[in-house]
Length: 377
Image 1 (tube, rainbow, N blue to C red):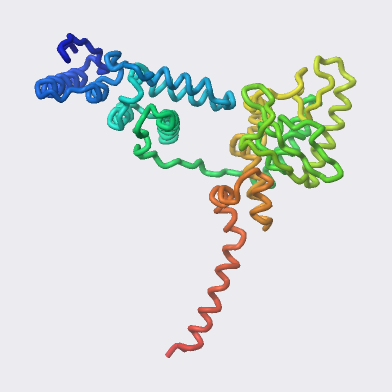
Image 2: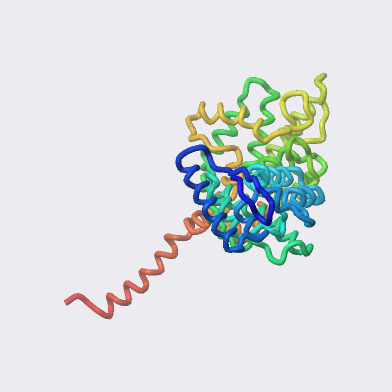
């Protein structure tokens, strides 16, 4: 679009496709620009709103692209979180806001981008808006903005995936079949899954467990490491370490892992000796990606005719078995590394199921008293 503004000939590239609908949108925008220009209402802020990708509005303050990159580079965050921000920025915000001066970004501009974007899911949309708002909030605290224009944007409701645990019978069948694997090095995965089914550790946490954090006398494992992007990190997902009590099934898995480690030391592999409790069957110290577990997991479920669910559901299985066994929710939450509120909201159906009928029995008292006072005529 070519037009004169502020005494200078301007040329702006529009993001509309060369279709009838796109041409109509471009024509409507041109009429709006001409009208505002004629009335003297096309100021810097309005210009930025109409042409958020324009270099014309670049001024003394940093552009959004410059500030976002500087903010991201200065943050002490995990690589996974860094990648999450970078992905959201590059996919949704940088293409439209990179050259816009950060103080000229308005709520209307953000709404227009949101409206014109085809979101793959409500969670993706929520994540992208939250990332943008976090960056703009930081710019506001630094005095670059008078207010955060993304703060008033309505966030889509977070959609929760339905919890789908295995039954205790299914868990036992899976573990038993894995221990029957004809290739003995592969049986370490049986011990790994048994450990996860009966401790509730996340996959990334279980793979990072080392012998030094196992206390056989106190029957605890100190959960303090995680596997992320192929590397072992000295943290958990929540940033808080915890001690998890080991029941008999978890101890049995550790006993097998110890025997496995002794046998592995007698071999000639590149990683015959490793400090990790559940090393892969090949010559590595630890399993670097949780997705690698699917190679052992999926065939067993298919053989047993068990409906396919991801290995992460071992954690859900432990939580629901504990709840249905009547364990204290506060204890279960501590074992899982959850808050009690998170536990209750995530597993409410199983929390209630064990006591629903006993609660319903209380109604009989009321029914009897009413019947006694009002006998049938």
